[in-house]
Length: 176
Image (cartoon, rainbow, N blue to C red; front, side):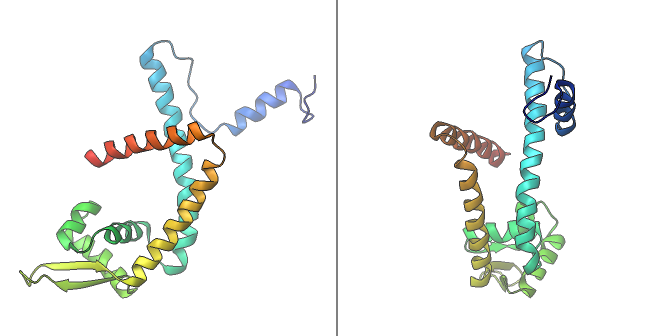
């Protein structure tokens, strides 16, 4: 028996198995087993989506020599007016010394500026520059364009469901 692609049924199954890079799970027997199987499949999908988006983002950031943590900091600073080094360290999950190194590189590229706080000269404050905001805006626009391409493959109901689900996940992650 040959398929339209010219493969036998066995070869077609073998090709599918070779292409499926996700974890192999057995048929779920209980609700917990089903949740586990779904979680395994979703974890694979999330990793693949992140890889896809990160690879594209990497190509965009490479010309400016900005790392992912640096870009994430810039994006966060773009939404805030000014942050202290300790606030940056907390947000990034780094020590203050590590955050200082991150900021120093961005300052060298003229994406951020550091200054002393008015009320306490020992406190270092960081704000994004217009050049940094322009980089964030350009990359965000590119990301929006990529998400729009994905949304065009979904029905309006699927688009709304995706937004609702991602919003719930985002809220959960922000609460942690």
